[in-house]
Length: 68
Image 1 (cartoon, rainbow, N blue to C red):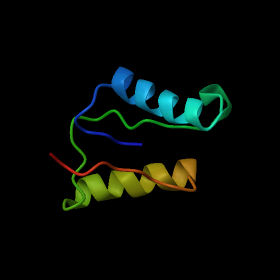
Image 2 (image 1 turned 45 degrees about the vertical axis):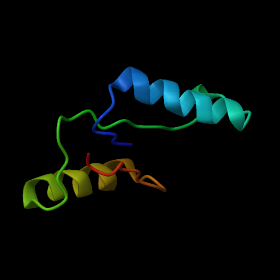
Image 3 (image 1 turned 135 degrees about the vertical axis):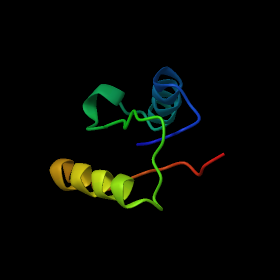
Image 4 (image 1 turned 90 degrees about the vertical axis):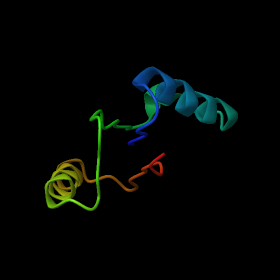
């Protein structure tokens, strides 16, 4: 999960709220947070890093908030 405009603690609180509404324990989920200051999908370097991370973690879903 990459949410550029939010601090990690804010992202955690948002996801925890979603989990609570769904009666899920956040600790039971395999969640990963990308903590880089920028993730540009229009640059080969960032795309390559994202692809490499996804290949390593093999997520079912990748979420990225839109840029501000």
